[in-house]
Length: 162
Image (cartoon, rainbow, N blue to C red):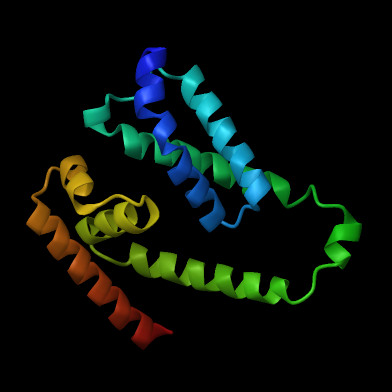
């Protein structure tokens, strides 16, 4: 991949990557750092990046998600004790969010493979139905149907299990 191709196809994904980092619980100033680190890593390995019509967006999102997970793992031990003692109510809200996220992740894992893949690409990857259809090789109607059935099944599972 050349520099112009990288600027044309990968750089516009910065905003999406930033939003993913924020949704994963990374503070705004650190989210920008994770985006920059992801872009740097993608640039270093630009020969491995697939072509734009062969899943470039999903590849870049997955690489950034992995960077965010790595940041989250390493950042838990970096906060000074003084900062940790000043934390109050948001800690319980954060714990609730993590608990809900882990439960929802378990429920998504319980879905059939097709529904699980489409829901993850739509909800976590932020892809629209056309992009999902291209990536999975399914029709647009089939993707819409899988999303609908998957979401309906998640609602039922949420009501019955939790």
